[in-house]
Image (cartoon, rainbow, N blue to C red; front, side, top):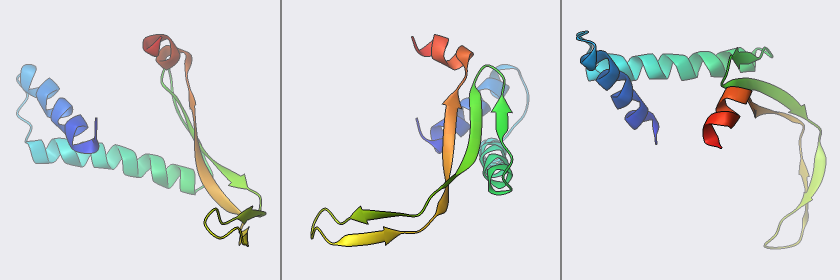
Length: 95
């Protein structure tokens, strides 16, 4: 499922409940949620959604890697990387 399909599901849910929502508004809602999660992680805070999981940005140390094509050593700078830890509800749902 991609972001457009997720927005279509949001629109479908509201349509079944008799709520007048455009497909464009459903896309804006999905975009808003993802943007809010990304902005929160960028600030260094975590986003915890009960029963689903936790999104957090972790600092990765600088390291030396190897280019697989040439074998040359490459310096990889320290950077923040996104991490997701699935919650119990999500783990149980996937089983």
